[in-house]
Structures are given as structure tokens and as C-alpha cells.
Image 1: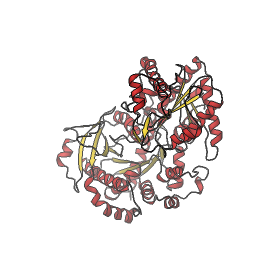
Image 2: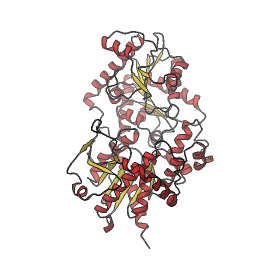
Image 3: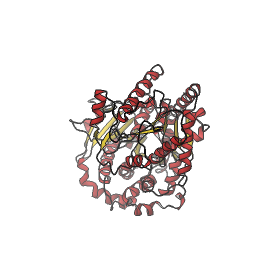
Image 4: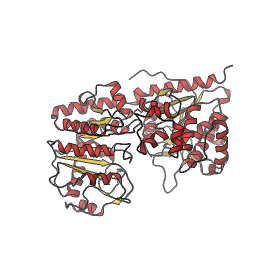
Length: 553
């Protein structure tokens, strides 16, 4: 156990759209960090998220309580139709959570936008999409935080911190800055709005980074409102953090403030099978994936087929899905010694499980189905970039193919209608994973992979990849990870390098693979919150120090 210097404060709130609301990677950050925060600051930490749930569709992660924060609730008076439900987040550590109903706040948005323009220059004029919803939620959350802070004695010198994640909570931070300057504030950007937009629009980000002006690019890409809000929150926070060195450089250039501290995303491997059950978990996962492949394609894949997985958000270029598919095609040209079966497990606009495949699985009747590269029906098959690329490369998944690619365009939640196993249940069956990211502020997917003892390939443009390069020798043998250098203009070189890396793994002896898998698990351990929480303690200290400096004469 590493030595941790804890801080003396009375209350820490952390606000995010993903508290008790699994949308993306931030949920993983918060839900895994909570256990360690609870260990050091038991129930001084309160997570605040949106109440977007109904009696018919309740949050699977929230357990309401009549006793938690009972005295506060008895005196609570919230205006403008804000509601709260108090309980605990049903995750390791069981932290206090408040779900905030914000429907009554939409009517206040225009007044809020005017105030934030006057105080901080936030330009909400060109707002669209989810901007209004984010403003209403974060404003409501800030009202709750203000009431909590006053109840717990902030006006009598108590030390308190309000932490806000992503631009979606920026209005809340700015409101606290305005009405409660005695409260220290932290703002974390996990990925800048404008950086993600630059990459998503096919523009080169890294080689040209110093030439970009964030405000100018926001106007060009119709991102003025979100960028303006994010920039104001970053500028006004007592402590500004981001999750990796690669994103810190992006923040400094595009938002105009260098982060005070980098807070890398730690990990808790509490969902990884115990060592005594890992062989069984691997066997069950491989049996499932091979069976789906057999019945979808009409082929019989050998038990020693080399299974490769990529997964994550459906961002075709940013997540390197294009590069993954091209690397798998290149691997086929290298005459691999084993049959290759590659899965693209990325949720898209899915309609339903394929009925023909579902029936064949139920009846256990292998058949070469029409379009044997995809497991579920899409609403937009002709517009789906992954499916189109699979067809344009020419993957046919016939019996003579050296490599086969299967697209799984759904959330693997255990009830998808084809695999009916979760992603974490299937992951142990892989021999390798590849996350060929172009834009990846951190990268939980490769970290999850090594936690399961599955070697992974990622790029130097991911925060996780940068961390591996800074802490370990760059090899499978040393870390269970291979980090390929990637830039704006070296696509073909990286494609070839990933294919060569995979061929190296395919050719490894059983003893070498056991050593590589153990190295992967050790890398995951080094990235646990046990070690990374110290960066958050540093952020807390900076925020409290800067808050106190405001009142010194």
C-alpha cells in the first residue's frame, strides 16, 4: 500500500451527468474512484447526478434512503421546481449520492445565460442540442450544493470543495463561483469539446496543435456555446485538471489554461474473476464467441483460433476503428500461423438481433447466413462506417479466409439476443485486444483488457499509452502492452506495425504468453486508485489554497 497524505476538509461534492447514469467512460472514472475516496474521506464525499429516472425505468445503481442526510433534507427548501432524491450509489464503497430533478430549471436558462455572459463571457447565443439540458441540470445541482454547504457550516469557516466534471456541469461551477466564493472549486475536462470536434471532423490535431486557436475553431465548427462554457469553467476554477499529459497540452492550447495537475484515471478490478476462476471464465467466453462465429459464417473455427477484440464508443476515426480493420486485413497478408477471428464490439444504431442468426443459435444449426460479418440488424446499414469498411476491404468470412471479422454493433449487457453475455464476461476469451486510437484522452478499454490479463495494443495518442511509455519498457514482455507511436500522417506505418505486433503474439510460446498475461495484470495493478488517488489529493489541496487566497488582504 502506498502512503497517502489525506486532507482535512468538511465536504466534497462531485457533480457529473454520469453519476448513477452509465453513459460513457466518466461513469467508470467516478464509480471506481468512489471506493478509495470513501476509504479516506468516509461520507464527506457526496456525488451529485441527474434524476433522469422514472418508476417504470429506475436507476439500476441508486438505492434511495430515508436516513441518509435526513437532517439536511428536513430543512431543505429548493425553489424553481428542483427536486432531490437521496441515497447511496450501489457500487463498491457505497458513497452518498443525490439525484437532482431539474425539469423546473429550463425556464431559468435565459436569465442564467445572461448572468454568465455578464460575469464570465460565456456565449450561449448559438447554443443547440444538449446545451440547455446541461445548463438546467448543472444549475439545479449548484443550488443543491449551495444549500448543502450552508447547512454544513461553510459560513463559519468550514472547508469545502465542489468538483465538476466536463462542460456539461460548467454552469454549476460558475454559479458556485458567483454566489458562494467561500467554496473551493475544481473543474475536470476529460476531453475538450473543440479537440474532439476537430478530430471528429477529420482535421489533423497533433502536428498542427500550436497553430489552432480554440475560439476560432469553435466558430468554424459551430461549437461556440460549449467551447465558451468549457473555457470559462476551466479559467475560473480554483483548480483545473485533466486526465493525461496528451490532453493537458490540448487544454493549454485550446482553452488557454494549463491544467494545474494531471489526474490519471485509476481503476478497480473488482469485476475481474478471481484467479481460481479465470481459466473457467476464459473457456466459457471462447466457447460462446466461437459458437456465434461458427453459426454466423457456416465455418468451423478451430479451438486455438486467435481471437482479437476492439471495443469502445462508436467514433470511427477517433477510436481507430478504421485503423483496426485495416491492420487486421494486413495481418492476413502476413500468413499468420493460426486462424484469426476479430470482433468489433462497438455499439451503433442497432435495431435488433438478427432473427436468422438467433434462430440458428437456438436450434444449433450452423448456416452461412447472408452478410456473415454482422450479428445484429442496424437501422442505417448503408450509412454505418464500420460495416461499409468491412465490405470495402473485402472480408467475406468464408472457409478459405485467413482472417474473419465480426461486427457486434450492440451494448453487450448480457441480454443482446445473440451472445447474452456481458462484455466483461467475453473479454477473458480474447487472446489480444487492439485500441488504435487517434483521439483518446485516457483509454479505459486497454486498461480493462490488461486487468483481465489480455495483452493489448494501443497508441501514443491515448493517455493510457502515454502513461505506459512513461512508466515501463514498451513491450509485451514488460507490460503486457505495446504502444505504437501515432501522429497525423503515419496511418500506413502504424497499420503495418500493429499487424506485426499481433503476429508476434500469435507466434509466442505458451510460456511466453503466460508471462505476457501476468505482465498485463501487473500493469493494471500499477494503475489502481490505490496509487492514483494522490493526484486528486493534490488537486484538492490546490483548490483549497486558491480559495483561501481570495480572502487574504
